[in-house]
Image 1: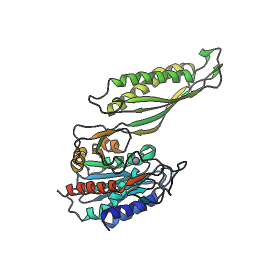
Image 2: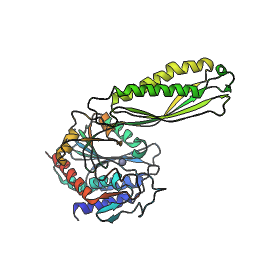
Image 3: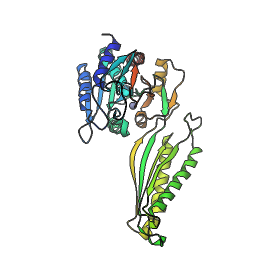
Image 4: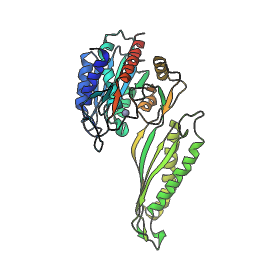
Length: 386
Ligand SMILES: [Zn+2]
């Protein structure tokens, strides 16, 4: 079987595992573990707290620094309420395109890594190839967060992380982060005729929102010089403001849904520090002066680190060289790349298929995209023999 056929056969196996984020991915992980163990890789499964999901970390080659991580997520988005023409969990080929849930996002890339692993294993690797396959990327990158924590403690330091999210094999060196929160205000109800006798949760929520909007304005002047993001600065969005029961009742409870998309780690620190300071040092004392049990509590729904474009990035340079790209780009979707960057590993996003097909019915990856991916992965592996 030629390499592309092997990748396609592996992809067919992977598509058949319905690894929707809420469900277990253990069957797929067992498959990957078996495939990699067979070729001599050292494989570790890292389970989540429920024991129903796991990350897979595997290495080929010597146990030394300077290796390359091939990274992909095992989970896929749901198919319910989507109008598929084929069974989403059966790989179907039509006109050079391979259909199925996860074909481009991102089991095509994982299939290429796995199908080529026997070839990689035969190489005289001077530095290791690592495989990092995670759970729960589509929800909040929970798997990758756990994996990166483990990696940070590992004695072996990989140099480069290649995240194979669908970019049509374009080299991507940056994307914004995405942080989502719900902030809940607990005040004290009372009759509307005497506002000072209660603590109006909606009024404090409005002050909080005003502060966020003030920060949003300030973020514009913090945009990094030459930023290629659109818009170029960190943004804040208010996604919801809920609370209140009647015109004449002081509101006891209110909620603000909000998100922000940092273009740089310093903006993440700036926003979280400033809004926390405002809530705890300015709003809360006023609320508690009237009602000691008044509270402000922020729930974090997800914090995905951005991938900050860096002047020095060995991952970008390697992929640009292998793909022949003259420049690297930035994209608007998030990936796990920023998490690797956060522990000092140069990261780049480059993978087969298009984000335009991701998460949609009749998701597909083109076979020539997989062929291009094979070439790049072989180039990466070859580099590690030098
Ligand atoms: Zn993805």
